[in-house]
Image (cartoon, rainbow, N blue to C red; front, side):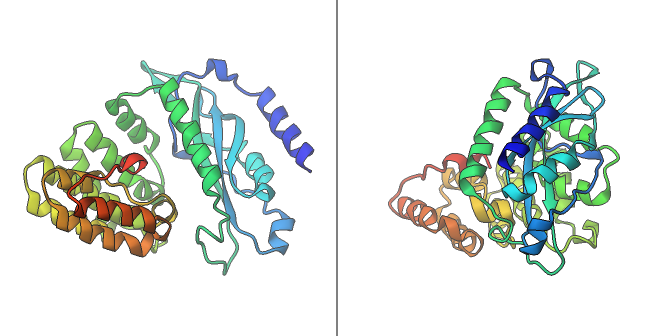
Length: 306
């Protein structure tokens, strides 16, 4: 079965766009057309659920020409590759014309009644770290300015279903902030926190709560409003969590900014809130807290990037 899987992926790639022709890497693009995967009987019989993350090659029309599974249960990988072969994405635009590009996508396998948690989804931190490293390498190979990142994301979401657009609002807010467009950053962040704008099919939006408040706090910090930034940090910590937040932990950019401003107590309170969702990071939070109480500034590392 392992040999057959490798052969299938290899053949799929041979008839696709050569990676030498690729001119851009735009992760997490919105899809225009999606085909649901066939649920493997082997997984169904064991009541397994999961998600497969893939690195996808697109032609200039946004059609999939190759796919490489990066993470996910082995039992789901072939079905994910077979399904995504029929997807279509927004074309990637460079210098006013569509170009071949790389993106990432996730194919999700659900069963009624099965609770979705990192454990039930078969999350593998080693695999996820390797995938993140791979994404970083591609970002270095195909660099984008902050303005280009924002433009790519906005173009990708043109005409997207309401649920897809809503789920991407935290990314839009962060991209706008990094591009220096504080008005857009504020608007996207507030929209991500607006419960009336949340689709009824979405019961929990942990990333939106955390990242929306984080962006508003960073905007407040840039404007010198320390009191508002403190409040937004505490509101960010009240998130219900998400697979990303629960595994890798929250982004600490706002916490670092407040530490730089001498606001240590509120950051320690925020860490206490983070413990509720980031159980895997208990030791990290202990170490950071000890450093702050000792008068130092923690090395947040990758938690300034996630």
